[in-house]
Image (tube, rainbow, N blue to C red):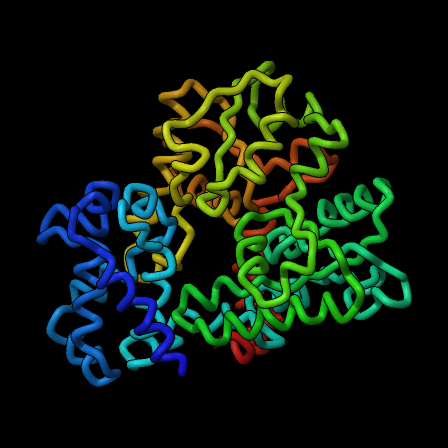
Length: 410
């Protein structure tokens, strides 16, 4: 059934696309410098004509460039904005990845540590090895006993790499009168990047079902991508899915001047708010602009509904690290520098992780570019400690827990 569903999504796009080419110039994957240009429709038709798993495997052998195109797509959906036929490119490329996985063209290789529907994955292992626990805080299972109405969903990056900040935000929600419990689960998006759509759907559905069964009526999200996953699940319309920036803006929250100056490395800096590509409706970025209204701000060339990927989406680094680096530098260096920004403020913890990793990979004598910070770091006392995080991510593979980590993740 999964094959038929995925192929149906691709077939619908192939039938709807008129080959106008509006999507092509908006995407370096569809318009590579050294190969013929593609459209979302032409790529979809190639897979529809292949029809079966065996056919897709043969297509992959004959046209590896098409497989490469699918794997290099960050699925930020920018090309969809220009489509007169309303083809949802993000859904199409997710379906194409699913077809590749089901046909055996792609495997779990490279995705072993992001099987977030299992007990042990990169985030749960990291927390276990480095003693990051939330056992003292109530979770979804405890919601009925606590008469909780709100679930705080910080997302895997924040809950794993900034535990103090996670606790501070939960405490703030309670100070606002919400009887909130905590989830440290992942939304399941890494599974979708690997082409495991059926597992991703089952995982997110389990999250929604558990929340509803526990009597939760409101879920608060730090990250737009997590909100997207929950929103697509059956029954999610019975929940109020709330962007944390909306609550912060409504409460009159404002950045801590000393945190802003510290993050920017200068007094009275100019800020640029980086919108996640999952936030084209502005439910996070809009309120954040109210929160930072008293700061001096500029807009990046790509913002709001025209936001682009930070470089991390789609696990593209597994097949083309260079394109990921270019995407990251476009939104971390090129556009902020052109706009005159000193500090890039991200609204997604994964984007912030990407920016930190990009800076870490730079040579010691590289010219310093704009600084970066997640919006929560500028509103609460605690911050991400990226040098420590990266050091701990590396050391857990070789320290005393190394054999256990390898056993669980490889």
